Amino acid sequence: FHVFCAGLVREALKIDGVRDKCVLVTGCDSGFGNHVARQLDRRGFQVIATCMTEKGCSDLEAAASPNLRTVLLNLTDGASLDRVVELVRSVTGARGLWGLVNNAGRSIPIGPTEWMQVEDFKKVLDVNLIGMIDITLRLLPLVKRARGRIVNVASVMGRVALTGGGYALSKWGVESFSDSLRRDMRAFGVKVSVIEPGFFKTAVTNVDLIEADLLRLWNRLPQDIKDSYGDKYLENCDKDISKVTWCMEHALTSRYPRTRYGAGWDAKLVWLPLSYCPTFITDFVICALFPVPKDTRVVGPSQVDVSST
Image 1 (tube, rainbow, N blue to C red):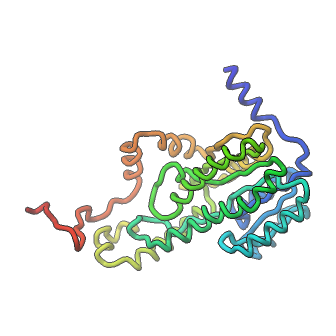
Image 2: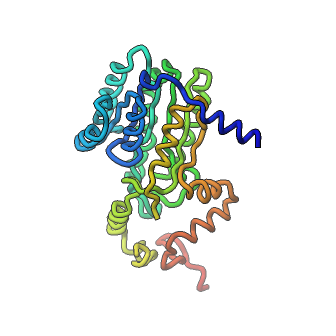
Image 3: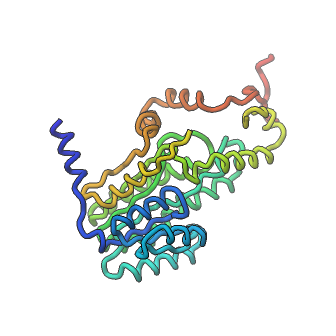
């Protein structure tokens, strides 16, 4: 009990001088990034929020104070990254960058692995993993100067791969990158935290977008693969995203931030505990949640069906 209470007191200790500290948040058009940018702005941080679209920038500026800056960023474009780094360097000066929140990401294409092509994986990995690493490396000297914080948004799918596509791969990569970066930066006073959200209602988990992309993948499949899954194969999100943005804010403002934050009851009670189970249990639970292909005994052109011999 005493250890538990001491932990609560330790986590409640906050840093001073937030008005002199600058935080860059990526992926602020909507969802977690938009919410945490406004949240940190209200706390008094100097926030630089990156968006993919002009509309995202203008909408966020209208909802925040004049102190919040927005800038366009495409994580897969080197020139776009250069412009953002120059802006951050000019704003922070000798102080350095207190916080980097790597939130930008995409989920689709996502679906059964057999439905994918290599390009489908690259589309997601280039943003969620390579782009995140790229901007982190470019801004790391400024974060070191401030002895600041890096907050990387992973997912429960960085612990348990629920389906195919690049999303789970990218989030496993975020977990690994964050672990190595945290250990490398520890001697320099830089703290690295990982946010592991469950399933929240954001653009990344937009059911309509995911279903539309699944239909696109389905329509390009060869007929023999379609037949093996069956037409019926094609045939609940949490809305309170503040649970995730609270974790981000705590990682930036606590004197002793956690290494990992599980955000959402489904993450805490289902997905993260499931990641510690033996593989056969994890496989059983996940397979029970997804549709079963129509024909599970499909013979490919280079295989021999021995079941009838």
